[in-house]
Image (cartoon, rainbow, N blue to C red; front, side, top):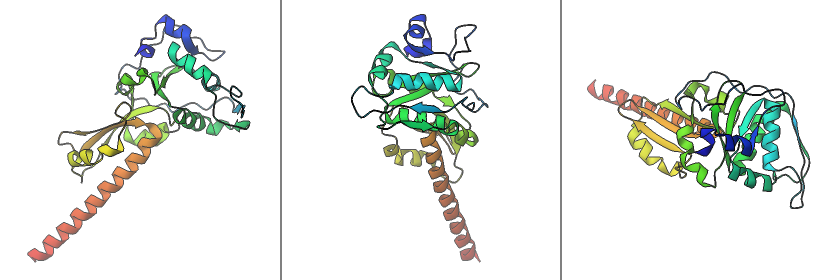
Length: 245
């Protein structure tokens, strides 16, 4: 994917650096999609005022939204040349002016990006943190899944503060036939480019990939399925014990 190479033309095409931050050396991709990162998203320095407009061409562009988001959150946002043209020509879909509080900024921007067909992948976890904005309706999406950030399952909720971030996690379901479950749930992952649900050998574990907020919901659902399976096995065991008696 062109974004992840971080060549000079891509940087020139669209990288937003916060005013007071400049990288000392070219940024590199996260070393491995399975690398553990313990740092949550930093608190924004301020909220954001988003101008709206009912007329075509009025209001804040998606490119402008990404630029302002990068500025107030001290993050570099990478955008390819092709995506820049698309994002610059499209407005954030709000009719009226909207003030977003700092505590809601990551969530609001991420939800807005997903609604507009834009996903985020982690490129650099150090300082400044760098995210690439990917147009999910373009050829850029083909390799996005391989760049999902690994997040331990116990940290999913923390990372879902940014709903548009693509992540991978593993879920242990000790009471469930995960191979059969993965096959049964294929209908829940219709977009193979950004979602995956894979069973892992005989470990009773699933490796799942998707956008952070949606994975929190999927993990809760799979946990409920496993709890129901555990209850059914317990009842079955009690019944067997009574018959033996």
